Length: 609
Image (spheres, rainbow, N blue to C red):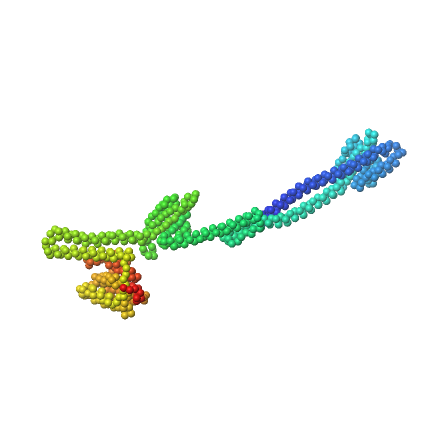
C-alpha cells in the first residue's frame, strides 16, 4: 500500500515519465545505432575479405604454372604457393589454395599442414569449382567461434584451374560490438541517472508550488485565511498561485461578511419581541429564538421535533405552508410558571429558493395578549359606560314621563320626582367628569401644579370634609404625621381628590363604630407613604388584582346605590402615577383594608406653585 501511495505522487509520476521517455528514446537510438554499426562492420569485414580473396585469385590466375601437373615441379610449386599464401594470410584468417580437383595445395595455418593433399569437401568450395564466384557464409566452429568463409574459383584462360578457401574469424568484430554495447549501456545508465537527478530538480519546481497550494487549500478548509501561497514566477503555476491568494482573500472577506450577517441575524432573532421558528423542507425545526421558546413555554426542542409538535397544532397548516401556501392562526397557551393565558398569532410563510421550490417554512409568533386585553377592556368599557349612562337616563325618562302624565299636579310627588331626576343628573355629571379626568390622564394633557403642602393640615382637612359621614356611622378617625416629614411638594388638588376617594371608600365599607387610621411618613426607600387603614368588610382576594380597573365594583349593587361611578380608584391611581408614585392595597375579608399611596419626596424649592 505504501508503494502504491508513493506512485500516486505527481513528482514520482513526472520523474518516471521522463525516465521512461529517455529510456525509450535511448533504446530506439541504441537499437538503430548498434544494428547499423554491426551491419557496417560485418560489411566492411566481408568487403576486406573479398578484396583479399580477389587479389589472391587474381595473382594465382596470372601464374597458371602453379597449378601445372608436372611432377618434377610439384615440390617447388607447393613451396611457391605456401609462400604466397603466407604472404596474403592475416592473423585471424586461414587461407587454403586448392587445385581443380578440390585437393589442398597449400594452407596459411601451420596447424593445418596435414590437410595438404587432401580433398576439401565444403559445399562452398564445390560451388566455387563449378564457377560460382559469390560464395560466402558464416559458420560457428567447434570452439563456438563465428567465422566468415569465402570460396572463390581461380580461372586462367577461361578455365577453372583451382580455387581459394578462406576462413576468417569474426571474434574480434563481435568483441568490438560487445564493447560498443557495454559503452552504450553504461552511457544509458549514466544518462538515466543524470536524467533522474535533473527530473527530481525539475519536478520539484512544479510540485513544490502544487504542494504549497495543497497546504493552503487545507488551511482554507480549516478556516485559516492568514497564510499565503508563495509566487515564484509568472508562469502558469505562478498565475495559479496568485489567483489562489486572491481567491483566499475574497473568500475570507465573504466569510467575514457572512459571519457578521449571521451574528446580526442571530442578535436580531434573539432580541425580537416576536417569536420565530424556521424549519427545513420536511417541517423539522432547525432555528428558534429565545422569545419563541418563552412564548411556547419550552426549553430546548428535542432533535428532529416538527413545527406542529412545537406549536401543538395539527400538521395540515404546516403541510400547506411547505407546499407554498401562506396562512395564519391564533393560539392560546397557558404558561405553567405564571398561570396566565398567553394569546399569540402565528403567521406561517414558506421559504423559497431559486429554482428549488419550497425549502422550508418560517413561523412568526406575535404576542397579542395585551392587544386582546385592551380590546376586551375597550369592549367592557363601552359596555360599562353604556350601562352607567343608561341606568340614570332610564330613571330620568321614566320620572319625566310620570311628571308628564300628571304627577306635576301633585306637588309632593312632583318634588320627589324632580329630586330623583336631579340626583340622577348629578350622577351622570360625576360620571362624565370622571371620564374627562381619565381622558386627560390617558392623553397626557393633565399637568401637575406642585406646591409646598403641609401634610398634617392636608389630612385634617380631608377628615373635616367627611366629618358628617363619620359622625353618622360613629367611626373614629386618627391622623398621624411623622415629625421628620411634615411637608411635601405635591399637586394639592390632585392628592386631595385621591385622599377623598380613599377615605370615602373606607367610610362606605366600614361598619358603624369602626375605626380609620390615616398616617403619613417617609419609608426606607425615601418615599412619602400615606396610608388609610380601616376596619371594614375588606375585599375578597379574587378581586384584589382588578380593583383598580375602570368600572370594576366588588359589590356592584351596593356601590351603585352609594353613588359610586366605579372610576374613583382608577382616577386615584392615574393621579398617583402622574406624581411618579404608586398605590398599593392590602385587604382581608371581614378584617379591613390598608391602602398606601407612595409618592417621591422632591427637594424643597425644586418646583414652585
